Image: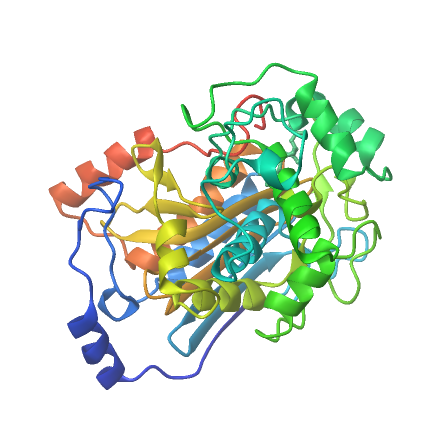
Length: 414
Ligand code: REY
């Protein structure tokens, strides 16, 4: 077990922040009333004991290792439990790199919104006007892609119907974007454009095609020049189709559906996801990234507001443009993304002002129990120690019942 708290926060900063805080339960432009935007200075202190308990519970439920890093306005909390490598027994540390899965979607959305700022892309224009003939319906807009309302079928539903055989079949494959779009288009759309939220990797594969078309660069270069280099994310990379995670990293472990020994899934091309899920990063870098994003340092205020136009997912979650919102039991909303890639579960979320950021990882997947447990790091990190009043208990109970993990809904991932 490693636990450390370093750095300082200033009381004056907290006072100033509380003066700037947006009132709780403010209505969003899309009319959602449950969002509660709270500045970091108004939050309860992170609950390190609670975080430790969550990580240990994840281990007891089958995760080889689990870790969390909180960056709280200059104060850092780092906790880790268990193994990065089950063969050597090397302990997991919060400096280890890992595959972030769909947290990559937030990177892709940032690049696209920067292109909106540059006048090269319009959110409400047909995707086909940028990529002629690609999609079967001219009414599908860029905004529909980024909010998962295009109706484009998620090809991973079929690809990973059987978890380990599905993974082994693609782990060394190299797909073109067009290959992945073709897999999707072989199936009927799930809804008319704009009509419903339906999470689909296909949307962010098309997002990658848009980046390449509009910048004339591979997505790797766009991520590098626009996000990784300016924010000095030294542990972050996009190496597709290379299969190796360079440097010190957590190995990923994928449990078979039928039980038994987990497969070491560390090395894979992640070509099945690319701009929908192939980034490698660290807890520090993801915290830096989401702090910069919500802090307004990656795009104009106008585009950041677009990113936070919420489509309801369920009663405690909304999806913006490549950005998730989760409403916690203490009435605080947090902003970021989740990620699932074979052997890795990630949560990376920040406060409304970007000043408290949290990244949690378990080096397992295909284990819904661990996924739900790991989500509790957000409660400990943003809500502090649990309250014991009757009102707090009943609100927590409601949240527990209504909360489910929304990843790609059509395949059983637990
Ligand atoms: C793919 C399957 C999950 C994961 C996925 N991830 O779409 C995107 C995301 C990038 O939202 C796999 N589950 C697992 C199965 C279920 O194979 N049969 O749990 O590792 O992050």
